[in-house]
Length: 221
Image (tube, rainbow, N blue to C red; front, side, top):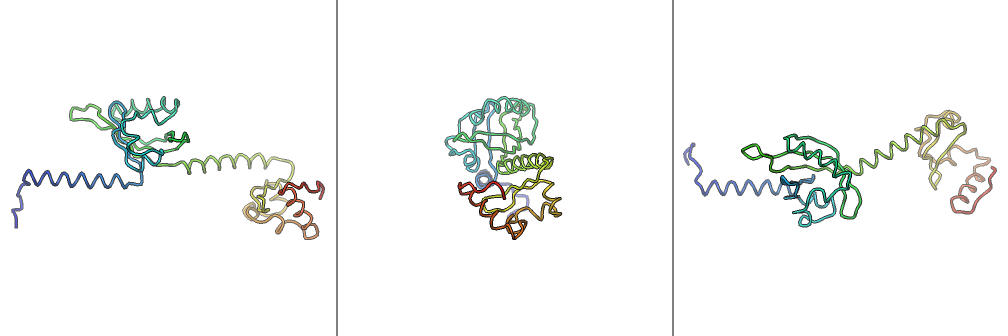
């Protein structure tokens, strides 16, 4: 058994450091988040594979490129303000929009931290990047839907919006009040099967199918 307080020999210390660096490298490479490091001049010095994939590049294509290469003019102006904060030692989380290689936009959340040398001089910054594009699109669609619903609800007529199969996608308040059912009991159901009287169901459905197929259909039911 070795001595409890035995010091590591230089060779052992070097091996330990190499092993630690390799472990951290593997953790970063397999992280679900993007990892992006820029130097004091905002030049990319490291990205992991996940970060490169988010933007549609290879790791090699991103290394050595300026941070501003991956955003539009508006993004550059915003990024300059954030970079000034990094140089002042501010770490923070914020939303940001990048441009992918194919020109499409990607919405992200960045957790950014400035790094300094022993003298307190800013040397680089590391960002952990999460892709929230789908979440952002869903939120925008929800907001648009809510706004549309407000317009529909003030309309003085009953409005029903269905898909091509007749499933109810949107209704206004007047429809809900007329049927005396809450909106959630109507949405998703087939309009013709559940809410049209049997005596006119076939005719209304036939006219609807004619319109969907481009055949027109009678205007009066």
